[in-house]
Length: 108
Image 1 (cartoon, helix red, strand yellow):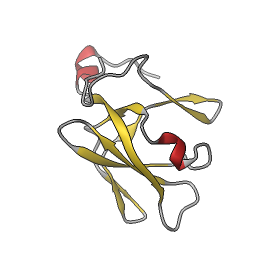
Image 2 (tube, one colour):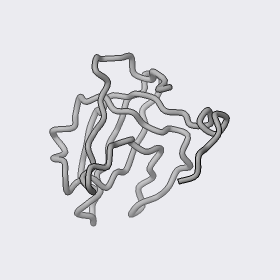
Image 3 (cartoon, one colour):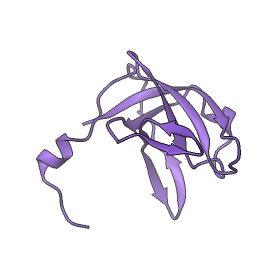
Image 4 (cartoon, one colour):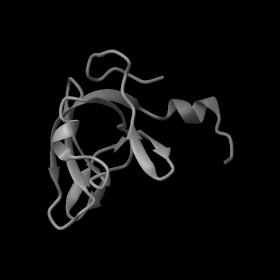
C-alpha cells in the first residue's frame, strides 16, 4: 500500500460512539442496521457483520467510526459512516476504547 501524508490522515474524522440499537436489514443475511450515539447526533451505520456478531451483543459497546465517509445505500438503507474493525483473517474484530469515553470523542 502506498503511504499517505499527514494531511491525508487529518482528513479522516474518526469519532467514538455508543451503539444504541442493532437490527437485521430486511432482505439480507449479512447486513445489520446499527444506530450509534455520538453525543450531539445519532447516525445509522449499515455493516456487513451479521455473520460474526449477534445483534443484541453489540448494544452498549463503544466503537470508533469514520463519520466523514460519503453516505452509501445498501438495500435502500443509508449508511452514514463506517465502523472501524481489525481484519483478522477475514474475521472482523471490534475495536473498543480501554475505558469509557464521551460519545463524540475524536480518535487521533
